[in-house]
Image (cartoon, rainbow, N blue to C red; front, side, top):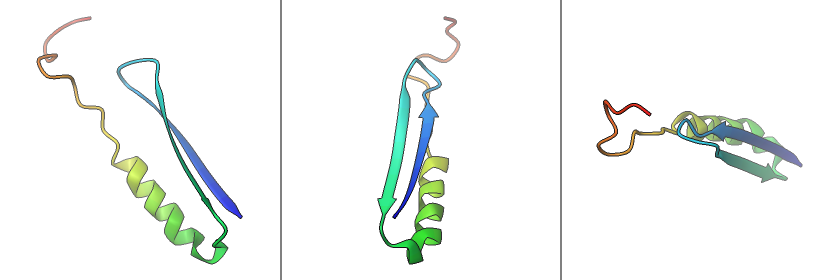
Length: 56
């Protein structure tokens, strides 16, 4: 059994996104861990509409 868990703090507030993958397929672990890395690497926190230039 393998598990990876990644905590990504939101840039806009006191929140955290948690990505977790559990698998019993140890033979596939390299593929799964690369997939999770790609997913986590694609997380973006766009500014809310109209928030550009506002201080606050």
